[in-house]
Length: 266
Image 1 (cartoon, one colour):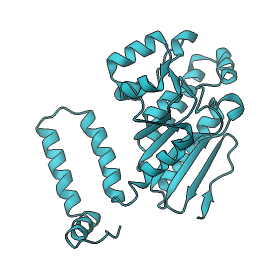
Image 2 (cartoon, rainbow, N blue to C red):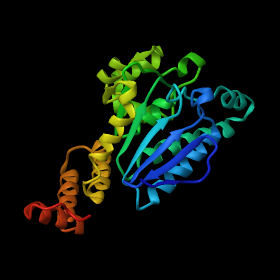
Image 3 (cartoon, rainbow, N blue to C red):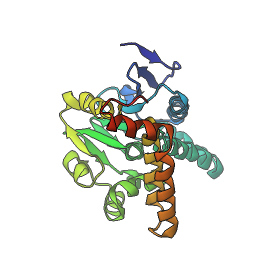
């Protein structure tokens, strides 16, 4: 199977296989894939490329080495100590931009988590549609230990685990084992380390035969409904949406293929 490799990044790898599954790999194993400003910029660039590539049908986010990511790189954090508040805000906005782009990625996304995922790494995880974690993985919202707050990742973490669990783990900075992470909905499924990549890939492959337009629209639907009260405006939005989809090219093809008992031609 042919594999397309994107730009020659320094801190990540980005590739696309013949099935339409893109792989975005954190590639700083010597420092537990801790991210700095350059890695963040590279991730933003790669996600933009993948989002605009019509061959892409899904995205797998993972990391080389023993750990998924230790969060922010300590050298990068030290460098920000001598920067102004404005410089720090611009720097933090880059991470916020990365999280938003991953969260709004138009195709199904999966995070495969091994080893440790600390601090800002939990933001990346919570922006993905599906999360598989190795059964001995460890998580921690560790920011308050350093006198910091999990600001840019908070919207996504709170959405994933709820405000009660978020307040507990953001305030205590206590470690979260894989079983607890699954229980509080930080991750969806656990897998043995040797099966992590296979399980993640299999879930993405299960979406390949679905309508690309329906998948993208469903992700937008979930985001819209999450932020709206169930009122007349939402009733109109959802009814107008399904009507629009039913008469769309892929909606027509999907229903026709089902009735004719044949695979749809997307």
